[in-house]
Length: 332
Image 1 (cartoon, one colour):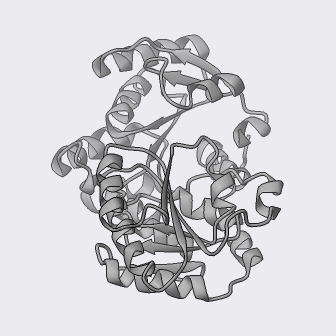
Image 2 (image 1 turned 45 degrees about the vertical axis):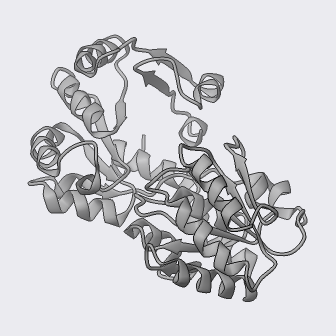
């Protein structure tokens, strides 16, 4: 939306018309269905689009799709190509590191820039590839701020409230959050809300019952507007094993919240500036996590300072950085 606000016409190219944000994308942008049921067909479909529409730039995400975009650019070198990397490839379970390193070292040379969403992703790519350093640039994820009325609304819940937002799956490690909160609940009257869904939900609900926390822990499922719940909470906790960036941390800061996060990637350090805007604790240590949650809940903080610390991630700021990456310092 921020790029659109700058007067840039945007087409969304989808391999098929599906996804939880499809309706929103179609409401605001021109969405094109490439009808591409196999990845190997994508270079040809992209090449046809580039030939027919002649865009100034193509932005691509995800390794296999990035390789296809690089191949398409061979026939359309005047189109700028930005490859957007969201997580450290050496930690990916979708491909062996050697395969990513060899293909990226070769084909990513065809791009204009390779954007990493954090210094950790930058260092990871730089460390396993050859000759890409000059193309790599860090541009943080753009975050849309909450509506003003959400930030200013009074707390809707009695007592202190901790919120957790994300997929209920392995990498997000919601089980660690639940075990840590069980320790917090012994000395505090705080409540915990999980926002998100995933295959671990049934298991987590059974564990909640075993811990006797039915009245203290709620599962709200997927919410299209999590800001409503974040803005009504006191503290956000991220318990992930790994994160490329950590959008929800910024979203919480924009609501004035402090954050407790596991040390799940350098993106967390980029955002929290090594404990300035929240606390970073070791991974997979429920006792340490519980101790810091208790401390943060008891310590007064300046909500306006949290909001100010998140301004560098606003969409309009990131949009200008993308425009500079695409068009150079003399933004088009």
